[in-house]
Image (cartoon, rainbow, N blue to C red; front, side, top):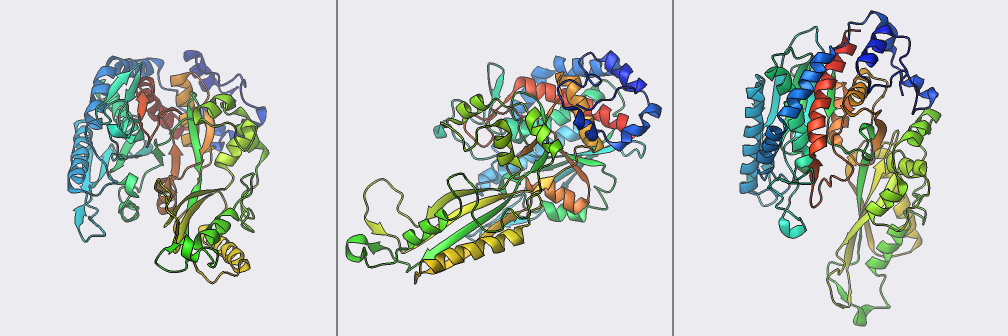
Length: 528
């Protein structure tokens, strides 16, 4: 917990908001005082905090209109904006979804540009238009900070036959849970940002920050065309942005969280080829160097039984764990028994919360994903594949670099293969290389988010990393040299990309309040 005792204005603010515990020091090790950003040194001369009456008015407005907000989410979920399957009908749905979002922003008074990012060339020669990227802005006052929100309007495929208990594109509320594809990933959070702005507008209150929106429709398909647009607009649309906020993650538990890091990803294929035709095992079994046997040996050489990666040098550039970081893992809210039950596994590789979290977030991991060319259908076909391709990936952490990892993996696999003295042909390829992302939790946008969470939820957030890869975070950070904040709304059990995806009504509505409070906190810190 950031201890702010001795700052009169903040003590007054704490007194106004009993939920805040900024001066207690309870619940966090004292060494986390190091998280206090330098900007607080001038807090004695800072402007007064936002009046409690304004916060109450904003929150009251959001509560009063929550059924209306749920209805809007219902309308958005009803649009089958699937970007993964490139077919004309779904591309039309993406264009319809983009138009809905643009209209909602225009109703707020935003200046909205729909930026053409071209067409998508498909393997069969067909060309499909890509949905335009929305660039929208409200306010351009130099005295105010500028917050830019990134979100996406597209979703993963979904069908009730896949195991959904409700129609995936019909928002259904059951026991306070709003089920529907895109509810948490990412339509609900996008709308929560819009609702936060609408509360200020409806109450005729001055928006305390300039707000920009970047909304795309191709995130689930790799954000095609986005990076080129961002780089073109570095000195235009993004010139005066203070921070970029992404709300496309989940909490670790039922407790709110801030995400300050994600892992990268190097995805590999390894092919072993004897010939392009399969063999009959009765005719050739016993006299061949079978490609499958070579491939299994190669894949088996990548990790040991404890999950440790056996590629030489792979851990050489992993950033060392600091004591402050260990304290964050110790403070994180994770019930290991419940986590294991929800994952439906008998046991994990590690026994303590700290070990589990570090191996999820801040150590690299290697996962084997599948084999092409092998017989995988039901039955007893006695085939010897003539060519097989294994697929695996390594999740990267600071300070691992993709070219180095690529060389290390290829060198290791070629050495193992040569030791088998096989005449088969080996091909190793890294088909995807995405770098990890890390932020400084001492930056002002993280402090503002922590304060806003305390105001809305009455608790300190977990400071966590995400074991997955969110490429846009690193892309914004590198292309624009801007600070990035990940401020999730999703609960741990929301099931993004899975059957029965949902967002809790409470997360959706309280999340709208969270973003409104975040605007006020950013304005407060900007004036210091």
